[in-house]
Length: 333
Image (cartoon, rainbow, N blue to C red; front, side):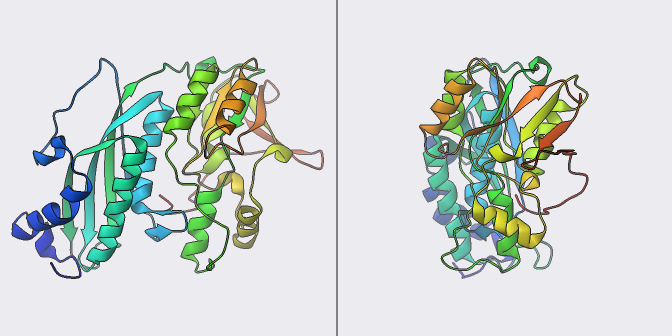
């Protein structure tokens, strides 16, 4: 096998078979995938949660992860936020001619490691190779299936008095990727993506309290996701700036790049709206698990300005946090 991917590896012939048999099958070995069919027949459940996502991040490798880890976490987390227990993933690569096999193997190993941690199996997939200049190294598409474990009431059941929680510090992924893309990260810097699967954290939250809605604040960050909660509704969400868990390294990076942490993507955090009676129990459950140590209540649901998200600042003022209108951070997932 050569050092780089050529168009021959996307032909469906001998070299495609070698790529599958020498790199992909050993990494994701299971009885479903061994069939090498166009789909997989897997054990089911009466109610399924289904999601799909594509990953085009640049650069493909960043402190705290890479596109491989990200593609598992992103799809697993979407299933978790819908109240599902992730079980199976599909995996499709679109590789640019000239991409190195050493980089591909690094990505594949990251996918295998993260899938194992998340308890999901890669059961079907596809590989395409495009000509040099017609891609950007590697893109990945995944689809995921999970079994529903909880029914979340949703946006319509959010009511004044409810509490808004976040499972950890915000803005880490977006700030890290933008700093890496700009060449401003150096060895020893503390800034790292928060990329992680939310399987355990979401399960703990669902066991601990009365959850109205859960969402992972990826593109557009916390502010945009909360605006999706309030859109066309008769309530508002008031945030406390002093309560926001923002790491100093994230704030410094955002100050340097002219970004707002509230609009920077997270890839291992979740926002939850809970009943006021169980918010404390949910926070306690989250803080007891890895990745949830900095869980915090960051706001409350009110009737002050229906349909809006309001940030109450440290100096006693307030401002409306609008939904992101453009692309502040392109290619961050």
